Image 1 (tube, rainbow, N blue to C red):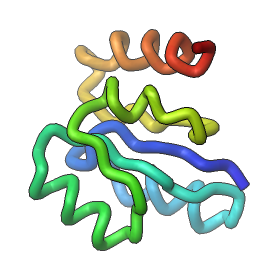
Image 2 (image 1 turned 90 degrees about the vertical axis):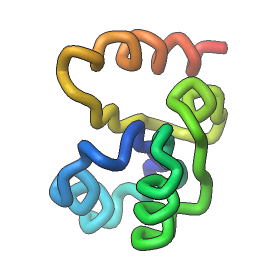
Image 3 (image 1 turned 180 degrees about the vertical axis):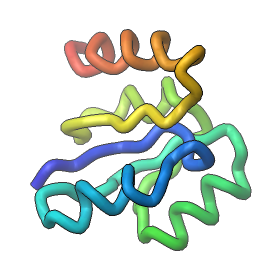
Image 4 (image 1 turned 90 degrees about the horizontal axis):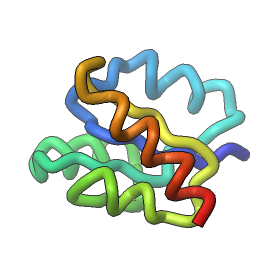
Length: 89
């Protein structure tokens, strides 16, 4: 089972969450969003066990196999670069 985290609940489309999880091949184990009410709501609705106030905190999580980076394209690169760097530590 692939365990993944999501950066920013507000940008995530239902298909971005439902696709991997409905296949049975993946489970969302963590969500990071600076907007606390949005993060808590998403976690509660989707039974996501771990919450983080920001992406760097989520990326330090050692038990994730993948990360969905759901931010606007203009802000995507820093997270996309940080994710594999964090996993190699």
